[in-house]
Image (cartoon, rainbow, N blue to C red; front, side, top):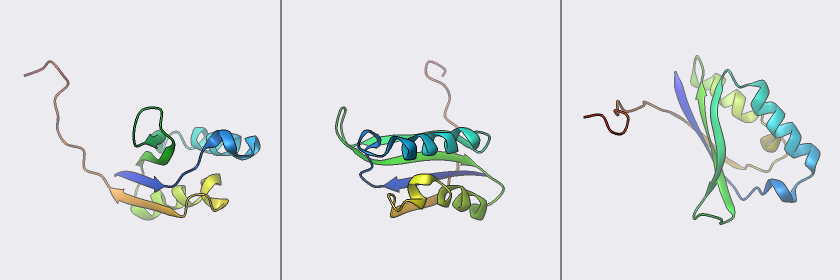
Length: 98
């Protein structure tokens, strides 16, 4: 199943202990088979981070939630508002196809 994990926070990796940020990105890489996309969210281009979004492929929602909970940023208490949703991808055709 596919899930979307939404993190609402103000984590700025540049302001954190580099070892924690490295651990976070190592975690994403180590779980690349399940976390297919991940990245920071901003309200406007160049603005501060206001959260992150992950796309997760997992057997069930509990597995997706465990992946979220295991993120070093979550373990450090930097992501107090994280949510996991079942995501049904819309059947949209690629641009230029009619």
